[in-house]
Length: 52
Image 1 (spheres, rainbow, N blue to C red):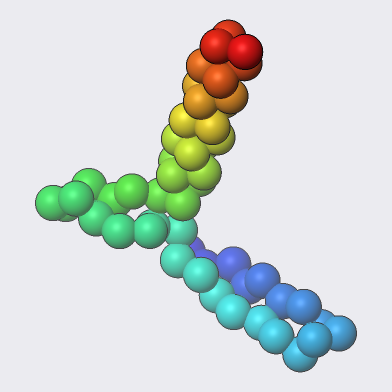
Image 2 (cartoon, rainbow, N blue to C red; image 1 turned 90 degrees about the vertical axis):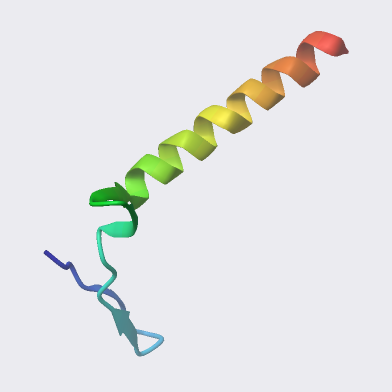
């Protein structure tokens, strides 16, 4: 299922896939990657803040 993302004033539109890539037959979704990156940034920030 694709959902169109468009920027009408720029004349740009595209239909991204929900899946970023596959590991074997298991799909890895974009929202999972974004959540994992956010978690990693929060952990790095907490470590940096605790050392200061």
